[in-house]
Image (cartoon, rainbow, N blue to C red; front, side):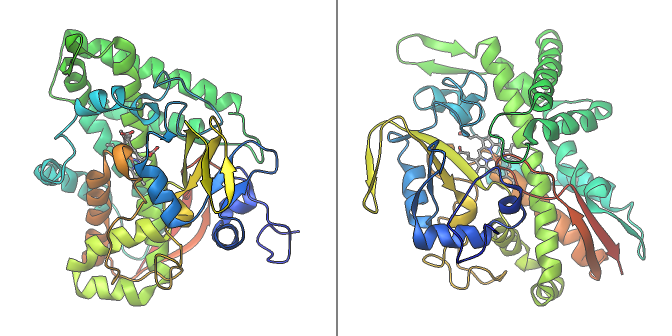
Length: 399
Ligand code: HEM
């Protein structure tokens, strides 16, 4: 029986293909019927209401990241995944290395470069043609932006993207990482490790050189540099986080806008609505569907007690559609007032690259609204991936 059938037993798995294809009906049932849901195989709890998730994201002392942002491949205080799987004080020290680099002001200063990347890819599109939007521009724009920042040679960027896609790909119903994902992770570390070694001897003005040269103040040890392993993990994280999710934001946003032509027409008539459209794309079909935490103490919520040490999945994708928080949440509308939305997480781990990702998507929407306002979207495909949800191909036709 379908997992979205309302008379069926409620069953949620983050690694189910059916859920991945359309998670929103099961999210609604979780919010209504089981806001503290226990995985049938007893592996984790699932929180799905906006208020519970927003509170958990703020309370890092209780909802710890130390074992990683996903239970499938637990970490140990940032050994594998850098700051995304650390708690303070270590988290704050390493994150502070790039403090100022991704602020709204810093991203505004990159605008000419970002616009050049977007224009280079979109200028190739011909009116009246049909193509795959992912290979035509949605893969390459974020890959080039983060590639430029990290100093990844152009010839290697597509290979790096393919490895990251393999790293995130999962098999139906299987929690363990497939061997291809583990192998891809090894390739990425080896590749980024080589780049780091090159920058050690000939530094530039790229992010890798900045991370290599940066330090932080430790109250006991004084001025510290990042260890070679910390540099590697931080650069790995930036290379993945900088591209995979933004690819999904651009394509999920274009699909949503094509399905809401009234809203797209408003953007075409008034491009000042584009920042609101990007935020609504993040809310309506969020690229990062869940993050995980482990409990440092027992927590009672909605009459259920979760034990210390338990894993808890925070369904950001469900929080963004919670009718307790958003009016008419299943509609894409440009007039929401915004506020503490959780599509980039919240609290100490809130996405470091949020302003960069927003600006990349805004520039794509801006270009299309100005040059190709009559586009249509056809067939599309997804690959089952961990935490990140979006398309691997999207047929697009320009009018
Ligand atoms: C639409 C695009 C993006 C989405 C939806 C997204 C989503 C997220 C989310 C939900 C988190 C929080 C994870 C947690 O709480 O466990 C996060 C953290 C992070 N993101 Fe993003 N991200 C995006 C783009 C980017 C970009 C472009 C970069 C880099 C340039 C980036 C770098 C990071 C880093 C370094 C962290 C870890 C922050 C920390 O743990 O303190 N992200 N992102």
